[in-house]
Structure formats: C-alpha cells, structure tokens
Image (cartoon, rainbow, N blue to C red; front, side):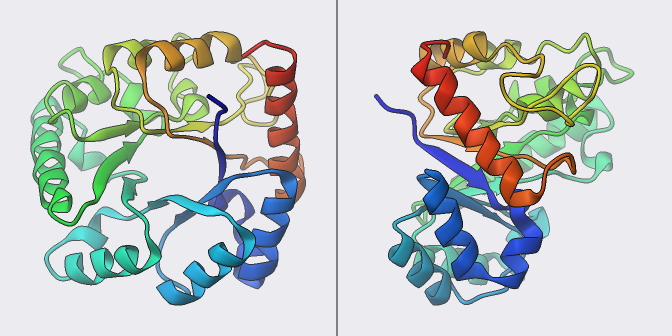
Length: 257
C-alpha cells in the first residue's frame, strides 16, 4: 500500500501565519497528501475545513496542548475538531514535572489512559509526541517513555519522532520503540538527524537508517500517516519540507524504504 505523507505545519509556521490558503495550496503542489496542524485555533474550523476541501488535503492530526483538554476547554476543543473532521489529538509535549520521576510518569500514563477513554466517547483518539527528554534515563534507571507507555492503555498512541529521540544521546536506540510498542504508532514523525550536525541535514544525507526504520514500521505498526517535519534554518521553510518529500519519494523509487 502506498504510504500517505503529511507535513507538520509547524515546519512552515511563518508562512502559515501569513497565508493559510496559499500555504496549503503550496503544500499540496509539493505532493503531500495531508497536513498536521498545531497549537491554538487561529481560524474557525469552518475556514480550515474549506481550505482543506479546496486543496484536497486531509487533516491528519493536530498537535494539541494538554491544557486544551482540561475540564474548562475539553468540549470546545472536541467540538472544533468534530467540525473539522479531525480524530487524531496529539499531545506535542508535557512539562518535565510530569515525567521527571517514575512516579510522575506513572501518573501521566494514568492521565493519558483516562483522556484516551474520554475522547473515544467522541470518536477521537489520543497520542503523544516525543522530544529528547523522554529518552533520557531517570534516577530510577529506566526511560520516561518506557514508564509512560508500558503503563498507559494500548489505545494511547505513540507518535514517535525519530530525529527528536536521537537528541537525547548518540546511544539512543531510535528503532527499539517500534517493536516494543506494536500497533500504537498511527502517525509518526520523520525528522532528518545527523549525529554531527543535528537537524541541519536532509533525509537521505543524515544518519537515520531509513530503510530499517520503515521496514520495522511495516512489520510492527499500522501507520496511517507518515508526517514529515523540518525545523532547521539550513533551508527556508517551504524549501525544507519540499526537499524532504522529494528525498523520501526518491528513496521509495530506489527501493530503499
């Protein structure tokens, strides 16, 4: 089955702020199938839905702050996404105090499980997006990401960001979570990363073994969306995400992924 590729719109945040419709049209022209939004609501759900319908793009998720799901904001947040047609709510990060000890991680796992169950009543799903801290061992010896996902219910999705994970340490095994948490990665983030230059690189020129990463995903996950994110200033925002989609399509054409 052909992979569906989306772009994390945070990658083109400055362009998006200036021109929603123009940004989406340009993203579609690059060959992307979907877009993942982030942050607060700067447009009505109806406006975004109209722009998506016009371009033929799909909203493949929304990076949503944890506080947007508290009791005061829950209904308005859910209502917005129902109008938009988005069912994938992704927490893009949490305060370190929610994962700076085993006890904190276990409490977070419980909170995630409860929220996933709450969202399911509205036909929506919860996932968590990692940075580097989650892959840094705690005093108790294990990784926050393990304490959280070993104890959260299976319906809590794990949106792995391979480039972010590697920022923890050069020794981080960015491939292990794919097999440790099977069928929990409905969407994943592809972010080029070089051990020498950090994010200032490009897919196919970096140190991620894309063939291994994608093979493991095919064997152990049911990935619905492959979401590309590029944040480095080596390229302009539009140039960066266009180079990424071209690079990953080239790897596909060459049979390397």
